[in-house]
Image 1 (tube, rainbow, N blue to C red):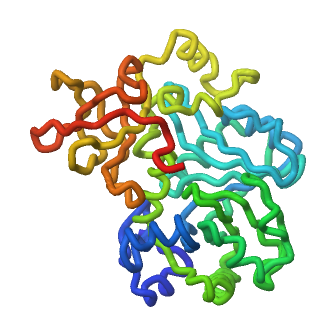
Image 2 (cartoon, rainbow, N blue to C red; image 1 turned 30 degrees about the horizontal axis):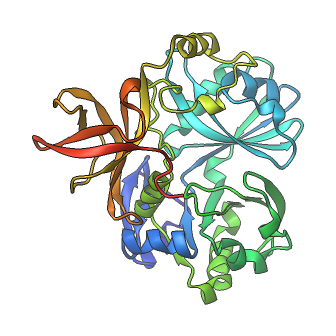
Amino acid sequence: MKTIPLHQIHVDLGAKIVPFAGFEMPVRYSSDMDEHHAVRNNVGVFDVSHMGEFTLKGPGALALIQKVSANDASVLVDGKVQYSYLPNEQGGVVDDLLVYRIKADEYLLVVNASNIEKDWNWIQQYNTEGVTMENISDNTCLFAIQGPKAAEAIQPLTAVALANMPYYTFQIGDFAGVPDVLISATGYTGSGGFEIYVPNDHAEKVWKAIFEAGASLGIQPIGLGARDTLRLEKGYCLYGNDLNDERSPLQAGLGWVTKFSKDFVNSESLKKEKEAGIKQKLVGFEMIDRGIPRGHYELCDAEGLPIGEVTSGTQSPTLQKGIGLGMVPTTLSKPGTPIFVKVRDRLLKAQVVKLPFVS
């Protein structure tokens, strides 16, 4: 197991440390419920330095990104971020990722921790035009300051006007006395906030500065437990659960970032799949009966016949009921449709709902 650079700080804060994506990561500091509400209603900080970062530089950088990713990166301008995914040749997904345009011939790709080596090798095999690729994952810390008071909490640390930054944009500037920090108006919680990319050498200084600046607002560290409930309430996919090497990105709801105006890996097959009509669909559902849906639980119809499975599930701290994402036939994907979750030979009633669960 790898450790993130500030591992000892999290241990000293009393975090429960668990294995996750090949790293020892803080899953909680107090309770998942308290940390979830802290981010929804106030501000909290995640150390997600396990994530992967690659830089792509050179005249062919955009062409390479266009080839390996499904979204259209040609629409990006300097300072813009884009959500995308890497399709594989078999109709599934290598990974989902963020694409940052630093300048015309320079991009930053941010990938999932469990897929760093896989993604690097995948992109590299299509790098036939000599794009300069660098894996900076081991030298980069990533702090996500999330919640409605995030801008207020960290504004004293930078001259960048945080409250004026549109969603999915970034700026590079001084932050907590560290030059050339990438400050990104992105996050995985749906509660607003920023993601700060910091060289390892300055990580401890920046982490401490964030907590000093936000102390009067009650800023607190947040673990991976709350990260999962926060993202699920917003219906955000998690690679390895809702997305994987086998599941179609169109079935998983990624049609909105699949741009057939260009050629990319497996685009012809995906186009045919779309034209033929999607037979299965990833939907959100809420429990009507009392119970918590968990990943891989069977989904059934009213007759008790299997129709699919839960891909992600939890007890929603905001709604105080069980919620989940799951694959069902398209014919059973309309909001309001009753479905059943099989829990230890019992069929618990649920219904399909429109995402997000929490607006």
